[in-house]
Length: 204
Image 1 (cartoon, rainbow, N blue to C red):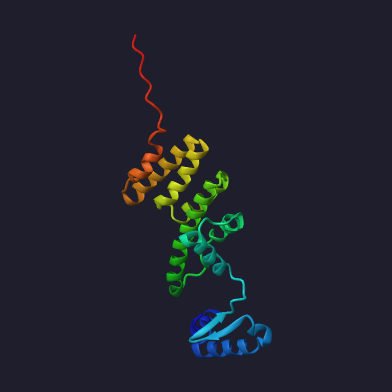
Image 2: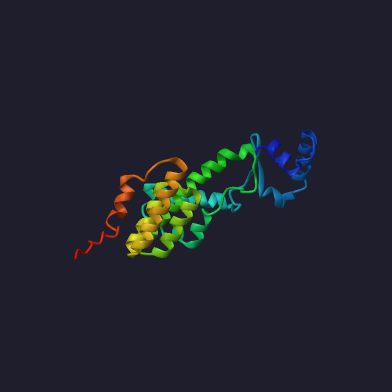
């Protein structure tokens, strides 16, 4: 973290010089134990690698899920705890301009990871968990078709035709209302065979 940015966040009411001085004093008071947690880097401060950070863990998990060289994900990477890693925004109560690029990068990473988790869970026939991961991906980006496809595919695999149709119609309506688009043919084909047949009218 940049020292100036960190100082202004910790002491928002202080002048820049005073905030920087307070940061230096705080670092000096950390002692040996604190220096095992926080270290200096060019232009800022860093947490040492031994410190467990949710974001760091999530990035490592996402790399294993999304990079083909890692092969099939193991059970730990699709566990409920692993899915939960990708279920929250980055610092949701912070609205600083410097955070926006990191928050957008995290949003993109987490939705891709959640989709990958849903697909892996589906492949293991863990349908309830696969649907839950897909719904979390939809929560991140409701207009993202690949997330919707994950959920609809799970419903179809489970034999829940009405749920699949309902999910499709909710998405189609929202997509049209918000951006004036239609779902792609690929998504529509998933549910095209599920639509109720028209009942022939009796004559006589």
